[in-house]
Length: 245
Image (cartoon, rainbow, N blue to C red; front, side, top):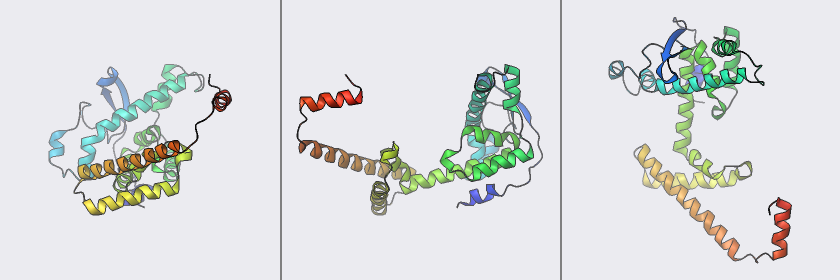
């Protein structure tokens, strides 16, 4: 378990700073309620003066650089929820009621329930809407969750599991033996090449992917070359059973 996850599973006390209103130019000047940790500058990008005074690798430095990208994503999830509440499945609320419900700040008890649910989920199952709900009640805590998600994503990238998922696009392709093969080959390439950073690591990743693509299509070619051609009758039956014409 990462240190970040250990930190956000034990939620700290909320700091001062209530909900503020910030105008978002991208949405035609609409007002959107965001946490104090987000709405501390004008909605036109990071405060570069403040960033230059911080260590770029520090938690606060990284947050200053990327938080506006996150604001756009949580805002999109907010708009989707407003749209949902105005639909038949969402109760056919009026626009004003839908905005009020989607913008409501969670109470302490509801926030704790959301946090417990997130803590039991895999990081790749956490949605923007879930993160948005936490942002509105405790932006500092949501920041810890986001940092942990990125930490887990980086670990997947460095270990080869992120690239291995390229070959597992459906459930029947999710094979333990195949995943072990990819990761073992990837780790062997890392050991020999010893990449110095993300760019060289991604180059090794591409070599590993190309190697497995070569293996896949070589096996497909050999299998088809050694398989007896299907008769016309068999082809017609296959088309009929699959619903094709």
